[in-house]
Length: 190
Image (cartoon, rainbow, N blue to C red; front, side, top):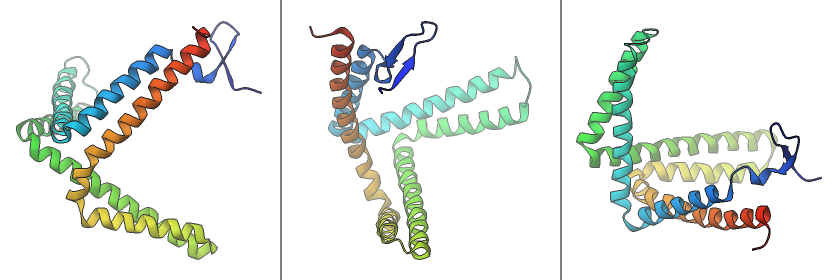
């Protein structure tokens, strides 16, 4: 039996893989390809630009949250606190985009390193408790990965844009191929 989803109001069934129109999947794939090429071609500039856009988002979001107090004064203290934090973070990122990028990437790597160590210890605990060799191997690998990230966070931070670029290219190629498969299945052979 094939996976199907009922279309609202029609009572008809359609395969689940056709949730998005083919052209939207194609557009997503092409945008992913552009992002991948940007990250692989100019990793530093693309990463600084992306972090700067986050700064703009936080700054504007903080201003709008403050502005919302004119209309809705509920939770005013929380809104003011969040607004001030967003505005300060946005201004810091826009004032120091290069330092902010390095800090954000290093912080991300440290978070992943700590998480890897935590997962590794969890797997090792499970391996000793249940006598599970597979879980022990995963625990050792995760622990080594986490320790390496924590020992060399700046090296790992430099590699992140390249990893993002490779994943974006692979995802873009897959989405473009899938879009044509969806179009062919929905419209029939051309």
